Structure formats: structure tokens, C-alpha cells
Length: 364
Image (tube, rainbow, N blue to C red; front, side, top):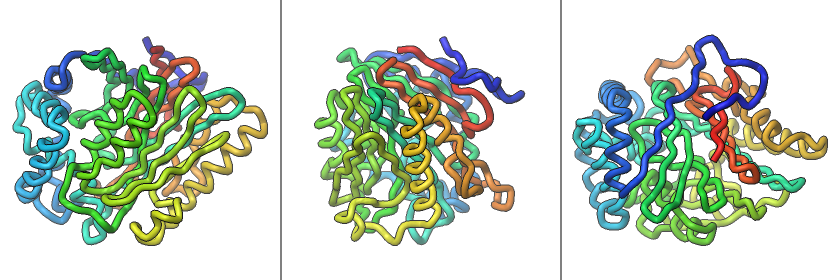
């Protein structure tokens, strides 16, 4: 089922991720995920219950109360994913509100007056030389690095989505049988509002049947905040849609495209604060590496993997590692990495920092 991307050989502690195949209605899919990841779900809730004051400035119990208004918005506009969340809760044997708090991670932790938060994701796509490849490093709290599974999901309409999935969250990135890859990055925005949490919006985009539908869903009028939605299609289309809670702008790539954690489109800059230097550095580094690799006719998958493993600007590099100088609750790292080869219908996944060993291959 899975093979390494390269011949480096795994790190001593590395091993293949569990493979989970689910299908059915949204509630049924959620229940299957919850049942299969029950221990991981319980461990995640226990961890964040303990550390939430350090990362969000409020207790977990307070967050559960505040999350109720977000749940109401999600139930009004995207009830199928609230049903999926209830399914995860049922399968794992937990209440749904703790899961809701985890799905409001950006809404509760990515504000200027909150504690240090996880915003180090990097996305990169190649659409040159007849190849169509999208890669992504998901940076989040280090406590989540051991909660990953490979998720192979089939929806009632036959849509198939393959991703690396962190329990107990809704899947929010992956490659679809409709021929496109979807990933995304957090972007701090200033017009946030009470609305549908970003993770629910991204879950909806992931199911889109075409790029136009994906863009329409990303601009859901009831969204609580913005995000960067990064999409690549096997037909050669490569774009990123930057949104805030009330605005949006599309950036099209040609031979390549990269994005980190700040607004790039001129019309979006009024909705965000000055970009963080580390985000600017990661973007410039990713663009330089891709340009050099394309000029040298480097294989597109190998090139994207090399970008995602890069350590220039460490400790705030593309390939993220936890900083021992920070309190354990605030340590950020690349919790998983994914490369989507749309031409060969392959997905490469890696749990943790991708420099630590080979990617696993899933053939669609």
C-alpha cells in the first residue's frame, strides 16, 4: 500500500502511518473515524484541556461556552459537517463540544491578544514541464504530531479523497478524484466575525467537484475568518484564493506557485497586519528553490519534497521543528507533510518533519 518517496531510509523511530478507509454519509464517515481513532481523540482532548490557557488565554471550559455560537453558525450553513463531527464524537465516545473547541483553533488562538500560535504552514505547487504537483507542510502544535493517520474517504456521490489526517479533526486538505489537490495556510486577518469556523469552510472546499465550486465555497458569506486556499488541478490550473471574513482575491500561478502565512494580493493587505518576517522569508525561499529546480529540469515530486525539507532560516524554516526554548505547550512544528502528484494519481505523506525520513506513497 505504501512505499518511500526516496532511498534515504526511515529514521529509527519512523514507521508507516495507519491506513483508514471510510465511506458513507457524513455522520457515518465521522463515526468510522471516531471509532478507529478513539484513543487519539481522547488523548488530544486531554492535552488541550490542560494547556488551553497557555495557547488561547482562556480555559477549555470557557472556550466550550464561546464555541456554542460558532456551532450554531456551522449548523445553520454546513449541517453535514456538524453531523460528521457528531459522528466522530459518537465513535470516539466523547461529547461534541470539546471537539468543537478544537475546530475553533484559529478563531480562539490566532488573534493578536492571544498566546503564541501555530502559523508556519507552507504550500507549493508546480505546473511546469508538463507536471502538476502540489505539496504542503502543516505546522501546528507539536502535541498533534503523533495523531496522524492516512485517510481514504469515499462520499455518497462517489467522490474519493485521500489525505493525511490528524485525529480528531475534520479532514481539511487532500487530493480528490475530481483531479485537484487542495491545501491551505492560516493568514491573520482583521475583520474576523462570529461565523462558520474556518475548518468547516475548508472541509466544504475539499469536497468541491471543480475549481469554480471550490472558489465559491471558500468565499462562503457566513465564514468567521479568512484563510489561504491553495488549489492545483491536473489540467494545469494553479491558484491560491486569499480570503478574510469579508473579502477575497485570487492569485494565479504559471509554472509554479507558493504561499505561506500572509496576504500577497495587494487588495487583501488592508485586511491583515504587516507580514511576519518569518513568513516572508519562507515564501521567498520556497519560490527561489522552485525556480532553480525548474530551471534544472528537476523531477517535480523530488523538487517539491526538497522544498518541504528545507531548513534555511531555522528555527523558522519551511521544515519545522519544535523549539526546546519554548514551553512544551507552545512548541510548533511540522506535524505532517503531503505531496500530491496529480498526473500519476499518487499521494505522498509523512508524519512529522519531512526531513526525518521517507514519505509514504498511496496510489489512488
